[in-house]
Image (tube, helix red, strand yellow):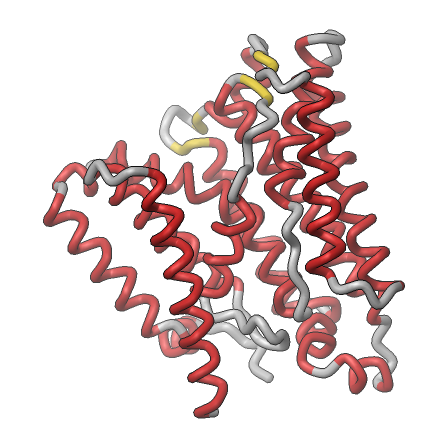
Length: 317
């Protein structure tokens, strides 16, 4: 099991998707030269950052051979809760944000506890919480956007560091470092690979499988809540429809980045490339005037191709 992640290993392990990413960028830039403009590239990074918040945690869960379908709905309910506290109850921004994050952790913890202590498949567990969280978002907001006029809240997702670096990208850099450290430099990260590779062997070696599983899902809830708050800040409102299909983008980024759906193998670096491919693909389709309806089809095809490639790769190895 390879846990080291030097530059050489990174390039070797991800050569295929790196070439695909480069070719995709070249093709789109030829079709629409505006793709390479600094404003558009920053926009791609800003949009991709939201998906990566989810995908980083989703990488951990899929390495455990699990799945989390509730992340998009958690984004919606946390965004609605946070904006409601600010706009309707006059709560300080910091308090509203902390409550929103706690809501995400709570839902993620429920997912993790049930997944760790019962035989119910994670797919069913998170499918249930996906519907519950989405319904809660509609109930709290009465199905309407909750607009926030607070400059300090709007700065969270729309501000710039030193007038250059978008705040969502800054958060992403910090989270990438944190997640890389967890997965490559801590016992917890090694335990995730061990549990995903062979749960029974991990159990007999003394690894607390329940604790590892609980952490992954709770962390996923936290990341989804953070993504929901950042998105609500960017949109100047909490919307019950936000995050729809976000779980699809996150799973696509993780699988495209080489993480095995059967568990035991995956890299944070691969997920980053996968998310960038999804982000560039969406941006390129938008620049070419392709309907958003077709984008769902394209992303679905990407997932199928990525999973099939993973199956072939595992058979050869």
